[in-house]
Amino acid sequence: MIWDYIAANYEENQPILAAQLRKASGVPSNNLRQNLKFLTDKGKLKRFDNGVYYIPGRSRLKSGAALSPSRVAEAKYIMQDGCVCGYYAGLKFANMLGITTQVPNAVEIVSNNASAKLRTVEMRGIRILLRKTRAVITSENYLALQFLDMLNTAEAYSELSEDRLYSLLKEYIKKTGITSGMISNYIGAFPDRVARILIEKRLFNVFA
Image (cartoon, rainbow, N blue to C red; front, side, top):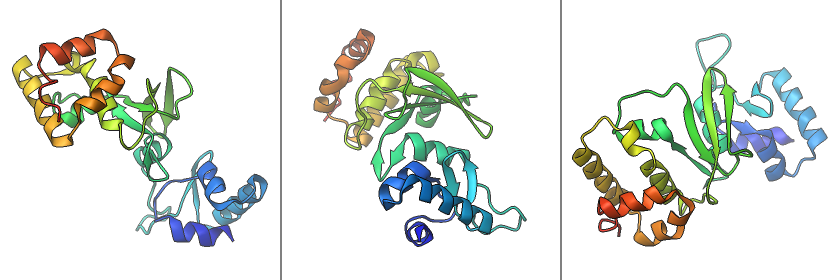
């Protein structure tokens, strides 16, 4: 039964995407829908949204522990089957880097799973700006693509002095181990200003 597969492969409050489950388990679509409905009716699973389920975790609340929308977003657009397929961008990533204290009212994600150049997705109170990637994102190249993407808007989002901003970015390059080869492979997919920044701020000298 599909429950045995779910119990063996998913933890409590971990997003279960029906499309992924069908592919991994080999259960036909109609049978899978019936099984998921049965398990939901029995309380073994909870439905978060269309095609998204989870095993409810223990909680003092009668309704059980709720699934985090951010975890669902990451499961759908950033990491699937153990492989990176997207990354945070824009103000969200600028905040993560520490170049701004602004908290975005919409989370920007660049993903292989974005079908349009830009679209807005509402997910249980979280607004996601989903952007199509300039190059196929993999576990090996996402850091380089994310960095190049960020360079395009870093100065616009930064609350730091120019010297401090680029000092922080150089520290980030060293920390992540992004190489000049990785950058050279994808720089052509980004606006010319990104290459100009790399040269003028001598960032190329920092790459491994």
